[in-house]
Length: 142
Image (tube, rainbow, N blue to C red; front, side, top):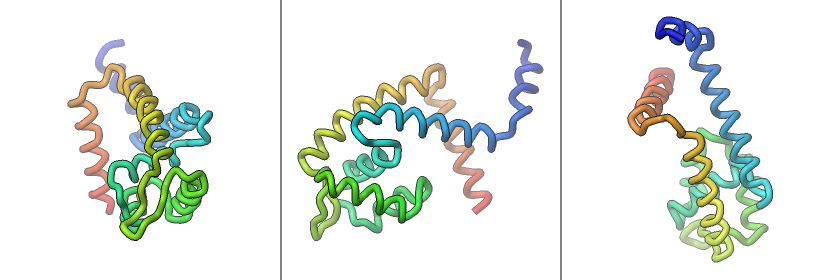
């Protein structure tokens, strides 16, 4: 396909279509990836956010995932993590338990493979430019 026809084919669907399609593919892929552990994308995101920032206050955690899902959904995911004894809450904030650290490590290995598959054929520069473009759109519309 020549360059002109490639550009025309891409222009048939606007950026919003591709944003939603990418989000849906990521959600489904991560849900499938972790299904055997009882985790989906949201569970992984909360577990990973805690692992990266522990101890983390509930309010700070809510801020870090606010663009991904609301506080009610966070509460549901967090309650499940606490119930499964993967996370504990201390006066300092939320922390992974030993079982949570073990599960996080296993899921993180899977995530790396998933990310590698998702990023096939996409350079780091192209990825960074895409993120910068989407960030600019969000800031422009905020």
